Length: 282
Image (cartoon, rainbow, N blue to C red; front, side):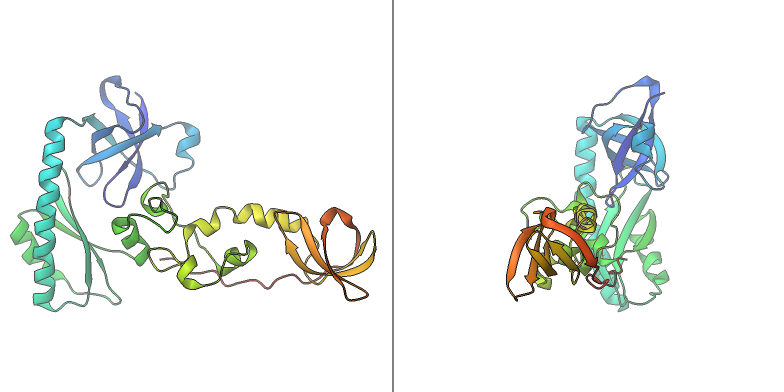
């Protein structure tokens, strides 16, 4: 029985789904699937090979029921409009109950098994009365799910500063830690307004090339190192990591940009840049 990696739901969860009746599906097609939450619409990403599955942390599991039909598309559109109305109802009840929470989105599952309410809150919220009222209004099971600001961007954001769809809402399944050290080593501007994403935190893309920069930097003498070059003794002041060059200060106080290959030996290694505190990413 063939298996596929499928992305589904507002939070774009990844799972391994088996196809019924040995059907085959191509990448990018939309399918109706059954997950542990109920019936949903999903997008086929690839076959579930051993290599692809190892790239997913704690994948969900389910079954592909069928290729999405025109009737399914109309039903999805209807549920989307219904979810907008449910959002307004939920917002009204939150204000009525004076709850300290911010509504982010309302997801109505394709099969109608439940309505999922996504919200932000600084502190613990007693929403038992809210759930009771929502269940009465919607006539279905209501699930409250607290999310962080990065998840909010994943749900609501569209395009980033680069002009492309935001990474968290396209190909990223996890959002690993990002630190200011990653911006500094790439000589990115340290202006928070320019290196922050739609969520207000450091951009995820700062991590993409960090490993390469870090590997190349290890091949260069650290800042503050005393070195012998083809023209004499000098001290390393700065590194041009991608270019493989060093800014050095010679014994006669001249500053010169040289290739790292011009360094004959390192007499004393410098301490290098200080380590930065990693940003916490809920």
